[in-house]
Length: 274
Image: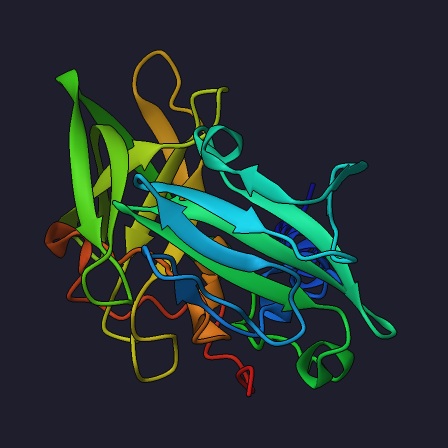
């Protein structure tokens, strides 16, 4: 295959990846359909348009639905007072509802030591007019060979969040090292998929200039038996917090703030949820 053909194939593969990300972002009840962000405590909370009164009881979330109010839990109709602790013990839950002609979902999940309530609606103007996400042109030069250096034992890692006081917890199995323009750099990697893939949170010299300031995320293929892999910076993507204030995205660890300008991957969104 000629170099030109390889570059064309590389660009086409990147475009397919980017299109898939954009499609996910416009899911009718996806994260960009969020219309609020609340944290539960002992006092009952009601949210306009969302069924129920929400609160913590003995540190666990519950919702009390008045007569005529219901929520849908994957096909099961909820009524009355419902404890939600077990439902979110291993991840969040989306509880469906309707408000007039709109379909909604109440997301309930732990965020650090707090319980989040994040309602979503499918009738938001942002989703209806999503402008898309600009990006740098795909460039094979930014698909950089890397080496994975595993720790003797995977480490627990805690990072901050775009919302003060929140923390995110990850497992860090090791460090990725790579070279750009003769200089070597390192990124702490977090556990990704079950296939051994890795996940990186990063900032660089473009952050807050041409790319989102808080963080971008990047999936890295599972290293081979010798620890070799490729970091394709063309696939550095925005987290939801780049588009909405109703997100709780993680921040990169201090060591993942690269001093160079990674002019690859997704840029600042054209608009944010209003």
